Length: 330
Image 1 (cartoon, rainbow, N blue to C red):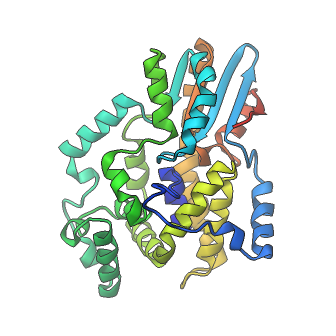
Image 2 (image 1 turned 90 degrees about the vertical axis):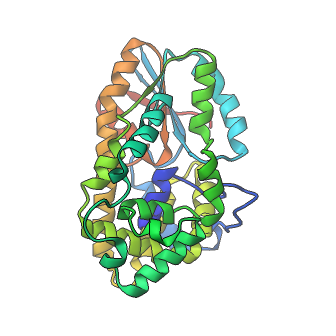
């Protein structure tokens, strides 16, 4: 459950992140038919469950929306080429974090280590059982993060690192060049204004608002699924390029049902909380920003693909504001 949420939100969709380095197997084809049918039924019941590229219109206002994948993949090149004429016709490009926000984020992490690290109170070895800490330190060292550093990381940050397979860490260090980055580069080359959908420190606030116990549970849940990290990643990537990313959320839900100490009821409650805190709340805050951009001329909006669907997904929210939605070829 947490793995699905974190991986999708990092995308939020690492998968065959660096195809040459990661060798995970897409889990979807091998699922029992009954499991696939249950997942497809759950996905099909959602608002706008499939599709990565959409047009929203309201009178003269036009907004193109694309769900993105933050890590590099050679398939992005052809997609970016197909999107280029639409970007060229936009008055504004909106992304989760533009170049200015990314620079502010880097500066903030340098100036305020407390954003990512525990600067007071008990360290992770003091908060976790001995066996759990040993498993965590080994998993972090596999990702090039020494135990002494991991011991002082904030639990949510540790969980995000665990959500990335060790094979993908080199790309993280070099800087991700997913579809978002290609869109920003194209817009900048043509001097099309690029704006952010939210302040640079939004995600910090979302995680900081989580109870300490919930953050520790994120670590334990992600650790419990760690032996399939590359497989979950490959599954997420293929789902993205199949324009069916929401199946990964439901796959994570069903996997979490089987974890020790979990029940379907507790997993469902946890996932609803995660969805509200990390997706829906952000989506609702983005709508006025999108509307303001649309009022100035055609807008092109790019964000993690998981934000598109669901009760308070961006598409459903725009529909409530009077926009007509049309799925476009991706």
